[in-house]
Image (cartoon, rainbow, N blue to C red; front, side):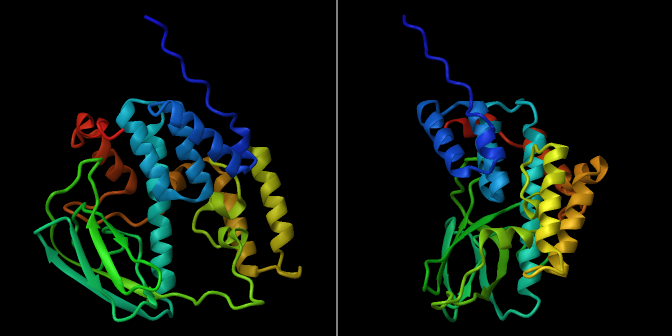
Length: 304
Protein backbone atom coordinates (compact mmCIF):
# COMPACT_ATOMS: atom_id res chain seq x y z
CA UNK A 1 0.00 0.00 0.00
CA UNK A 2 1.13 3.53 -0.78
CA UNK A 3 2.14 5.93 1.91
CA UNK A 4 -0.47 8.31 3.25
CA UNK A 5 0.57 11.87 2.49
CA UNK A 6 1.48 13.79 5.60
CA UNK A 7 -0.19 17.15 6.05
CA UNK A 8 1.99 20.19 5.47
CA UNK A 9 2.98 22.35 8.42
CA UNK A 10 0.48 25.06 9.28
CA UNK A 11 0.98 28.35 7.45
CA UNK A 12 3.48 30.73 9.00
CA UNK A 13 1.97 32.65 11.87
CA UNK A 14 3.32 35.87 10.43
CA UNK A 15 0.15 36.27 8.35
CA UNK A 16 -1.96 36.37 11.47
CA UNK A 17 0.53 38.20 13.65
CA UNK A 18 0.90 40.98 11.06
CA UNK A 19 -2.90 41.04 10.80
CA UNK A 20 -2.97 39.87 7.20
CA UNK A 21 -6.11 37.97 8.08
CA UNK A 22 -7.31 37.39 4.52
CA UNK A 23 -4.11 35.59 3.50
CA UNK A 24 -4.12 33.55 6.69
CA UNK A 25 -7.77 32.57 6.19
CA UNK A 26 -7.15 31.45 2.60
CA UNK A 27 -4.13 29.33 3.46
CA UNK A 28 -5.78 27.68 6.45
CA UNK A 29 -8.97 26.98 4.52
CA UNK A 30 -6.92 25.35 1.76
CA UNK A 31 -5.05 23.17 4.26
CA UNK A 32 -8.25 22.06 5.99
CA UNK A 33 -9.95 21.31 2.67
CA UNK A 34 -7.20 18.77 1.98
CA UNK A 35 -6.79 17.56 5.56
CA UNK A 36 -10.06 18.11 7.48
CA UNK A 37 -8.72 16.43 10.64
CA UNK A 38 -5.52 18.48 10.72
CA UNK A 39 -5.34 19.51 14.39
CA UNK A 40 -2.53 22.07 14.15
CA UNK A 41 -4.35 23.91 11.36
CA UNK A 42 -7.63 23.86 13.31
CA UNK A 43 -5.87 25.35 16.33
CA UNK A 44 -4.34 28.13 14.25
CA UNK A 45 -7.75 28.64 12.61
CA UNK A 46 -9.28 29.14 16.07
CA UNK A 47 -6.58 31.59 17.17
CA UNK A 48 -7.15 33.49 13.93
CA UNK A 49 -10.81 33.91 14.90
CA UNK A 50 -9.74 35.15 18.34
CA UNK A 51 -7.41 37.73 16.81
CA UNK A 52 -10.25 38.88 14.54
CA UNK A 53 -12.57 39.26 17.52
CA UNK A 54 -14.88 36.46 16.32
CA UNK A 55 -15.15 34.77 19.68
CA UNK A 56 -18.12 32.50 18.97
CA UNK A 57 -16.39 31.26 15.81
CA UNK A 58 -13.21 30.61 17.80
CA UNK A 59 -15.15 28.46 20.26
CA UNK A 60 -16.65 26.39 17.43
CA UNK A 61 -13.20 25.76 15.96
CA UNK A 62 -11.73 24.89 19.35
CA UNK A 63 -14.54 22.42 19.90
CA UNK A 64 -13.35 20.73 16.70
CA UNK A 65 -9.81 20.56 18.13
CA UNK A 66 -11.25 19.03 21.29
CA UNK A 67 -13.29 16.52 19.30
CA UNK A 68 -10.22 15.41 17.34
CA UNK A 69 -7.89 15.27 20.34
CA UNK A 70 -9.32 15.99 23.84
CA UNK A 71 -5.83 15.96 25.35
CA UNK A 72 -4.34 18.36 22.82
CA UNK A 73 -2.01 20.78 24.67
CA UNK A 74 -3.52 24.17 25.51
CA UNK A 75 -7.01 23.36 24.20
CA UNK A 76 -8.49 24.03 27.66
CA UNK A 77 -6.59 27.31 27.95
CA UNK A 78 -7.83 28.48 24.55
CA UNK A 79 -11.42 27.43 25.28
CA UNK A 80 -11.39 29.43 28.52
CA UNK A 81 -9.86 32.44 26.74
CA UNK A 82 -12.47 32.38 23.96
CA UNK A 83 -15.41 31.74 26.29
CA UNK A 84 -14.44 34.57 28.64
CA UNK A 85 -14.02 36.94 25.68
CA UNK A 86 -17.47 36.05 24.33
CA UNK A 87 -19.02 36.39 27.79
CA UNK A 88 -17.39 39.79 28.28
CA UNK A 89 -18.52 40.99 24.85
CA UNK A 90 -22.09 39.80 25.45
CA UNK A 91 -22.27 41.64 28.75
CA UNK A 92 -20.93 44.83 27.18
CA UNK A 93 -23.47 44.71 24.35
CA UNK A 94 -26.27 44.09 26.83
CA UNK A 95 -25.14 47.01 29.00
CA UNK A 96 -24.78 49.33 26.00
CA UNK A 97 -28.26 48.49 24.81
CA UNK A 98 -29.70 49.11 28.25
CA UNK A 99 -28.12 52.56 28.50
CA UNK A 100 -30.70 54.39 26.42
CA UNK A 101 -31.63 52.28 23.42
CA UNK A 102 -35.26 51.27 23.05
CA UNK A 103 -35.63 47.52 23.43
CA UNK A 104 -38.45 45.03 23.21
CA UNK A 105 -38.65 41.86 25.29
CA UNK A 106 -39.23 38.87 23.04
CA UNK A 107 -41.21 36.30 25.00
CA UNK A 108 -40.45 32.93 23.41
CA UNK A 109 -41.83 30.94 26.33
CA UNK A 110 -41.76 27.19 26.90
CA UNK A 111 -41.43 24.88 23.92
CA UNK A 112 -41.02 21.13 24.30
CA UNK A 113 -42.36 19.83 20.97
CA UNK A 114 -39.28 20.52 18.85
CA UNK A 115 -35.89 22.22 19.01
CA UNK A 116 -37.08 25.23 17.00
CA UNK A 117 -39.77 27.88 17.40
CA UNK A 118 -40.81 30.93 15.37
CA UNK A 119 -41.95 34.10 17.12
CA UNK A 120 -42.61 37.65 15.94
CA UNK A 121 -41.48 41.07 17.09
CA UNK A 122 -43.72 44.12 16.81
CA UNK A 123 -41.50 45.55 14.09
CA UNK A 124 -38.33 44.86 12.05
CA UNK A 125 -36.49 47.80 13.62
CA UNK A 126 -35.80 45.58 16.62
CA UNK A 127 -32.83 43.25 16.17
CA UNK A 128 -32.19 40.26 18.39
CA UNK A 129 -28.85 38.81 19.55
CA UNK A 130 -27.65 35.96 17.35
CA UNK A 131 -27.00 33.73 20.36
CA UNK A 132 -28.79 33.51 23.68
CA UNK A 133 -27.71 31.72 26.85
CA UNK A 134 -27.78 32.41 30.58
CA UNK A 135 -25.44 35.37 30.16
CA UNK A 136 -28.04 37.40 28.26
CA UNK A 137 -31.50 35.88 28.67
CA UNK A 138 -33.87 37.55 31.10
CA UNK A 139 -34.55 35.92 34.43
CA UNK A 140 -32.46 33.86 36.79
CA UNK A 141 -32.79 30.43 35.17
CA UNK A 142 -29.50 28.59 35.57
CA UNK A 143 -29.79 26.05 32.75
CA UNK A 144 -26.80 25.35 30.52
CA UNK A 145 -28.95 25.51 27.36
CA UNK A 146 -27.98 27.84 24.53
CA UNK A 147 -29.97 29.04 21.54
CA UNK A 148 -29.21 30.38 18.09
CA UNK A 149 -31.43 33.20 16.88
CA UNK A 150 -32.06 33.90 13.18
CA UNK A 151 -33.67 37.08 11.92
CA UNK A 152 -33.49 38.11 8.27
CA UNK A 153 -32.80 41.74 7.44
CA UNK A 154 -36.02 43.71 7.38
CA UNK A 155 -37.99 40.90 8.99
CA UNK A 156 -39.80 40.86 12.30
CA UNK A 157 -39.97 37.05 12.35
CA UNK A 158 -37.42 35.42 14.62
CA UNK A 159 -36.49 31.73 14.59
CA UNK A 160 -35.14 30.43 17.89
CA UNK A 161 -33.33 27.08 17.81
CA UNK A 162 -31.83 25.09 20.63
CA UNK A 163 -28.16 24.64 19.83
CA UNK A 164 -26.40 21.33 19.52
CA UNK A 165 -24.55 20.13 22.58
CA UNK A 166 -21.03 19.33 21.40
CA UNK A 167 -22.22 18.30 17.96
CA UNK A 168 -25.24 16.31 19.15
CA UNK A 169 -28.54 17.68 17.80
CA UNK A 170 -31.36 18.19 20.26
CA UNK A 171 -34.61 16.48 19.24
CA UNK A 172 -36.70 18.26 21.85
CA UNK A 173 -37.18 21.83 22.98
CA UNK A 174 -36.73 23.51 26.33
CA UNK A 175 -38.49 23.65 29.67
CA UNK A 176 -37.73 27.22 30.63
CA UNK A 177 -39.72 30.40 30.06
CA UNK A 178 -37.30 31.90 27.54
CA UNK A 179 -37.23 35.70 27.24
CA UNK A 180 -34.57 38.06 25.94
CA UNK A 181 -34.24 41.65 24.73
CA UNK A 182 -34.19 42.75 21.11
CA UNK A 183 -33.21 46.38 20.62
CA UNK A 184 -33.48 49.10 18.04
CA UNK A 185 -30.54 49.37 15.69
CA UNK A 186 -29.11 52.42 14.02
CA UNK A 187 -30.31 52.94 10.49
CA UNK A 188 -27.75 52.46 7.69
CA UNK A 189 -25.57 55.48 7.19
CA UNK A 190 -26.93 57.91 4.63
CA UNK A 191 -24.86 59.18 1.73
CA UNK A 192 -21.93 61.22 2.96
CA UNK A 193 -22.05 59.73 6.47
CA UNK A 194 -19.28 57.26 7.22
CA UNK A 195 -20.02 54.10 9.15
CA UNK A 196 -17.69 53.16 12.03
CA UNK A 197 -14.55 51.44 10.76
CA UNK A 198 -13.29 48.17 12.26
CA UNK A 199 -10.49 50.18 13.86
CA UNK A 200 -12.99 52.37 15.73
CA UNK A 201 -15.01 49.32 16.77
CA UNK A 202 -11.85 47.68 18.12
CA UNK A 203 -11.02 50.73 20.24
CA UNK A 204 -14.39 50.37 21.94
CA UNK A 205 -14.10 46.61 22.41
CA UNK A 206 -14.30 44.95 25.80
CA UNK A 207 -11.28 42.81 24.84
CA UNK A 208 -7.86 44.26 25.70
CA UNK A 209 -6.24 42.50 22.73
CA UNK A 210 -8.72 44.05 20.31
CA UNK A 211 -8.33 47.52 21.81
CA UNK A 212 -4.60 47.54 21.05
CA UNK A 213 -4.79 45.40 17.92
CA UNK A 214 -2.31 42.79 19.12
CA UNK A 215 -2.38 39.05 18.54
CA UNK A 216 -3.10 36.54 21.29
CA UNK A 217 0.55 35.46 21.27
CA UNK A 218 2.14 38.90 20.94
CA UNK A 219 5.60 39.70 22.22
CA UNK A 220 6.28 42.42 24.78
CA UNK A 221 7.94 44.50 22.06
CA UNK A 222 4.84 44.20 19.87
CA UNK A 223 2.63 45.18 22.80
CA UNK A 224 4.72 48.26 23.56
CA UNK A 225 4.73 49.32 19.92
CA UNK A 226 0.96 48.90 19.67
CA UNK A 227 0.41 50.95 22.82
CA UNK A 228 2.71 53.75 21.64
CA UNK A 229 0.80 53.94 18.36
CA UNK A 230 -2.59 53.88 20.11
CA UNK A 231 -1.53 56.53 22.65
CA UNK A 232 -0.33 58.85 19.90
CA UNK A 233 -3.44 58.33 17.77
CA UNK A 234 -5.99 58.58 20.60
CA UNK A 235 -4.47 61.35 22.71
CA UNK A 236 -7.22 63.82 23.67
CA UNK A 237 -5.11 66.77 22.45
CA UNK A 238 -5.03 65.41 18.90
CA UNK A 239 -7.74 65.80 16.29
CA UNK A 240 -9.90 62.70 16.47
CA UNK A 241 -8.55 61.81 19.89
CA UNK A 242 -10.75 60.62 22.72
CA UNK A 243 -10.29 60.79 26.47
CA UNK A 244 -12.37 57.64 26.92
CA UNK A 245 -10.58 55.63 24.23
CA UNK A 246 -7.17 56.88 25.39
CA UNK A 247 -7.97 55.66 28.91
CA UNK A 248 -9.25 52.34 27.53
CA UNK A 249 -5.99 51.78 25.65
CA UNK A 250 -4.00 52.61 28.79
CA UNK A 251 -6.03 50.13 30.84
CA UNK A 252 -5.53 47.44 28.19
CA UNK A 253 -1.77 47.98 28.12
CA UNK A 254 -1.39 47.98 31.89
CA UNK A 255 -3.22 44.67 32.16
CA UNK A 256 -1.59 42.87 29.22
CA UNK A 257 1.89 43.96 30.30
CA UNK A 258 1.33 42.51 33.78
CA UNK A 259 1.48 38.71 33.76
CA UNK A 260 -0.87 38.24 36.70
CA UNK A 261 -3.48 40.64 35.33
CA UNK A 262 -3.25 39.17 31.83
CA UNK A 263 -3.68 35.61 33.09
CA UNK A 264 -6.70 36.65 35.16
CA UNK A 265 -8.20 38.49 32.18
CA UNK A 266 -7.74 35.50 29.86
CA UNK A 267 -9.48 33.26 32.41
CA UNK A 268 -12.36 35.68 32.87
CA UNK A 269 -11.64 36.36 36.53
CA UNK A 270 -12.92 39.91 36.01
CA UNK A 271 -16.39 38.61 35.12
CA UNK A 272 -19.23 37.95 37.57
CA UNK A 273 -19.65 34.29 38.46
CA UNK A 274 -22.17 32.40 36.38
CA UNK A 275 -25.38 31.59 38.15
CA UNK A 276 -26.72 28.05 38.16
CA UNK A 277 -27.14 25.20 40.57
CA UNK A 278 -23.94 26.57 42.08
CA UNK A 279 -22.13 29.77 41.22
CA UNK A 280 -18.94 29.23 39.25
CA UNK A 281 -16.37 31.10 37.21
CA UNK A 282 -15.95 30.94 33.44
CA UNK A 283 -12.88 28.72 33.82
CA UNK A 284 -14.71 26.29 36.09
CA UNK A 285 -17.70 26.27 33.75
CA UNK A 286 -15.52 25.36 30.76
CA UNK A 287 -13.58 22.73 32.70
CA UNK A 288 -16.80 21.06 33.83
CA UNK A 289 -18.29 21.16 30.35
CA UNK A 290 -15.35 19.63 28.52
CA UNK A 291 -13.19 17.81 31.05
CA UNK A 292 -15.46 16.36 33.72
CA UNK A 293 -16.63 13.39 31.68
CA UNK A 294 -19.96 15.07 30.98
CA UNK A 295 -19.16 15.36 27.28
CA UNK A 296 -18.93 12.22 25.17
CA UNK A 297 -16.13 12.71 22.66
CA UNK A 298 -17.22 9.67 20.64
CA UNK A 299 -20.63 11.29 20.16
CA UNK A 300 -19.17 14.32 18.42
CA UNK A 301 -16.34 12.85 16.35
CA UNK A 302 -18.74 11.80 13.65
CA UNK A 303 -19.48 15.45 12.90
CA UNK A 304 -15.83 16.28 12.24
